[in-house]
Length: 163
Image (cartoon, helix red, strand yellow):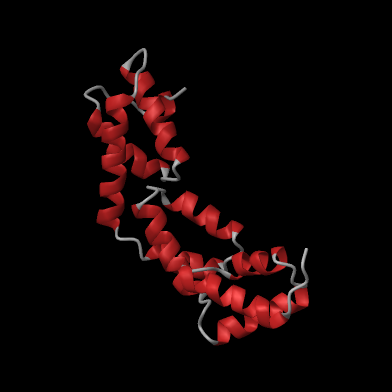
């Protein structure tokens, strides 16, 4: 691999940050993959933070918004993915707390209605369980899933009856 100067890596990282919101761990990974040393990456990241190319609070807000609206992920999944990116828990909590409850509920409700149309099962209980697992896999919380899932069925299914 060609050895790049710190200046070249700085320009590479700045361009990388200019295309979309990035977090420190993503930028560090990009710099080290491009041939930068760990101490060089730290200096570049420090400069990018100072110049506002990187702002983890801004990244968090953007990530939460995008994953909710486009990927239809719930709070649990979003929280998990942000922790994998080594974002501070306070920033994660702040960004997740800013989720609009009505929008969140609408997304879950539409997701469940849409999935119910294509889900096949032996019984209503079987379909209920599949939809519950689907929503839980997307990272929605149990109580909210049940709140929006129960009205989709005429029969009454309880969480403790699930397989």
